[in-house]
Length: 353
Ligand code: MRU
Image (cartoon, rainbow, N blue to C red):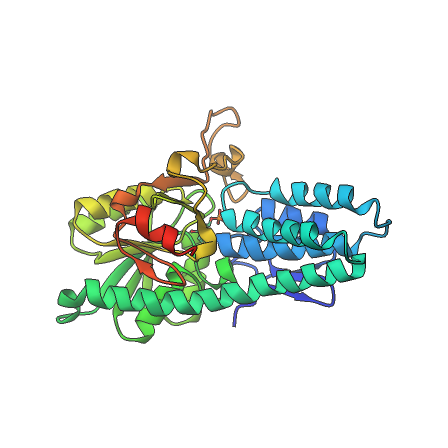
């Protein structure tokens, strides 16, 4: 069992993902500042897990408050702003803070601080529980879709699937989004092999997805990000499935940088390319992908590989952490409520009714 995140007796515990698979270090903290740092540095990462961590981080912040009720609103607003400033793209983080703000607005006047904190604690726990349940639903719906879409191939052989970044237990706390679907499809005998694209520069595919698959004894191999088109050309990939950090109302999807290139290649080779993400990753307030804020990270993430410098410190670098795949290249979006195939503009809206 991988324990990506826990919250017991006012202490946040998490597996520090920066060192995996070489070192399994479980960190415990009661400090919301340390928790924010863990999100910023990707010690805790993956859109759903960032949302879960954000909820618990707010609770840590509340636990260290010793002031009066009168002074609390200013403290709370600063706390929320600090959590929200940690990473900009994964909408799950803002979903978690919005939940806390909503409780604050509804309950502050009429409740004691203890009551308010208790409600927020319950909300944070619920965000976590929901993500675990969401993964189970996505796995079921995703496998149904794959069975249907790839029925012809499945009559003759099992499938090889490409995935990017890490979307498993490490990214969600549950079985995973895209990787949850893959694990379930493998258990049901649909998958022969998984291909994990390395996901430069922080190598979540090579380090983390590979680590999870090894633990589950699921056959896989890793490739460099730039290999996917060639493997598709050679008939070595049947379909792709990845997660998402934010999905716009028209289906445009932000995910780990490199995703868009795989999706375009899949489209060119007439291979299905799916997204698996809970409804909490859909930002229905934005029309299309151009409005998704894309995080730019430190240039040294690219100029170094795990602390070893591979380019001069003055090499100019652009280091976007995510890209946006237009909905037109996406065969289907598997959510926890429904697998939506095409017509995103109409269908995604309905998930919020
Ligand atoms: O920068 P990261 O590692 O947080 O990026 C993670 C991804 O891009 C994942 O694919 C996405 O969050 C979905 S996780 C279920």
